[in-house]
Length: 208
Image (cartoon, rainbow, N blue to C red):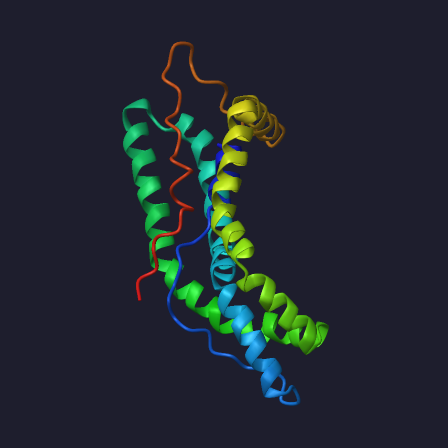
């Protein structure tokens, strides 16, 4: 649950083909503006992933909190309740992903673009652009998601169960201190079905 939520939040968004509209400081030479526009265009997948992280993080946190609470749902309704919560979280992502990504792309030039303009000279920006356009940089970018997935999968495989147990114990302890402790599940009762926390934060492919 806990680490799976972290893993889900790390999954990058699907790419958009829409162009980045550039706005920059009025006193910057056009040649510098053009270099920054190219850099932002190359970085568009990373900008989209960053934007999706803003949306998916609270959804993952909500899914992680809801999963233990399912133990309090009558056993006959647990499975259906878990599926409904999964569906609600997924629909939230589908309804809000593309609008937020579109807004993020529009904000990038007036935030990241301005920062690049202020912090880098035109020559430095050209060097950065040359690196970003190089085959090695492109290969690294294409491999980054796989590298992250391999790392998080191994981290979860080796530590997920242990941390899940500790996290549940922490939740129960806090709930007890707040007077909300409902007690452990009855002996022999089915454990609460886990919400599919890998999926709600997986960004749906934004539609043009």
